[in-house]
Image 1 (cartoon, rainbow over the protein chains, first blue to last red):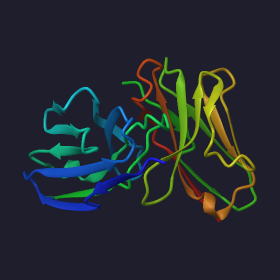
Image 2: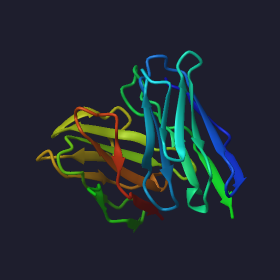
Image 3: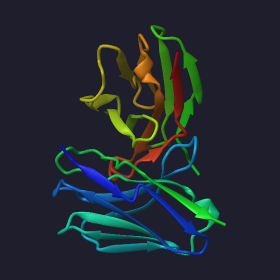
Image 4: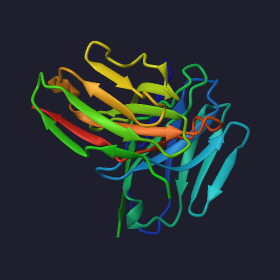
Length: 112
Length: 114
């Protein structure tokens, strides 16, 4: 089945720094690549996504880049703020499985 | 802003008891999903509905879990009997048919089985 890995598993940055989380997947037929943010005790929140015909997408301080050849996509957060602290999940939509396959998550801590 | 509603938010039960969770998707979303999230892991799909029909229940433990969406709107997930290993967050999500993979999640139900 689809294998999805996230790195790093934990990331601590100072407020104002940038953060990058990488997601690698195995299903070459995957065609949709979202990132979710999950705060403690809450459901995952879709924060940005990208489709397979686009290489990069940006929304204010958040961007996602996709490398389909290498089968990985990354979340970039600039000018981090304490409220960015959460667990972030990638969840590529598998072409073979027709479902979102969630990664293991990255705990981001932004130190004030 | 429209949201997915779930209830209860927390449920504590003893093993061998029956429990039920309810979900109301975003209005107009024909596709509804139930996920289970074990602490420290990502959500895993249990069942997917398109309107009132089950599309995928391959990961649903059917000996004890059941799900229904009788009128194609809200949905109920039931566990009977509950086991200690069922302790987890149960998440409901919904999506539009034409953007089926853009899924929006509810706040979840935290289940603790004692």
